[in-house]
Image (tube, rainbow, N blue to C red; front, side, top):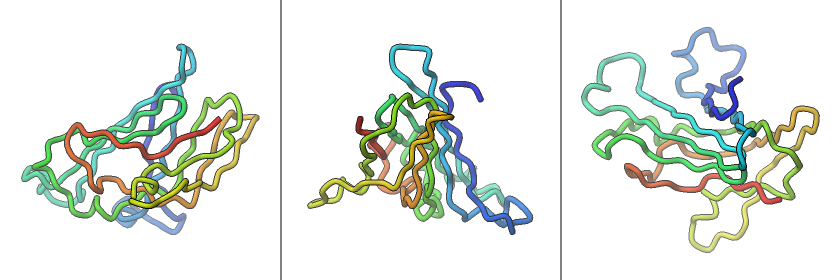
Length: 161
């Protein structure tokens, strides 16, 4: 995989026989950090529509950009606010794999969950795999397009070293 890429992948069960059967299944983000520069980094886009009709021509779609800077994963809505794909509001990221991490984080924080008033630190289940320099996060419930506005960036996750 090319360093610097973030790939959103359908995280569907093996029993699925087609992509349309898995359209409502959660997303897994695979982050392949470019480690050649001063700081690791990666970015990628996720585009969603229903895949069955042409309502995307009438603004029933969403597109977001994910960025990783070596410690934080952020999301930005990359198309105008007049675009609304209602099923994106219930679609979630339930797993993240970050490759190119040189040392294990002390903890990983769910920054999206911490944004709620009165929240403290919300830690994420994770494991560091030294042989592949990968941090694997699971049991997540990160929304795809909840509360996002065009060109407004929010933090999703933070690796604390």
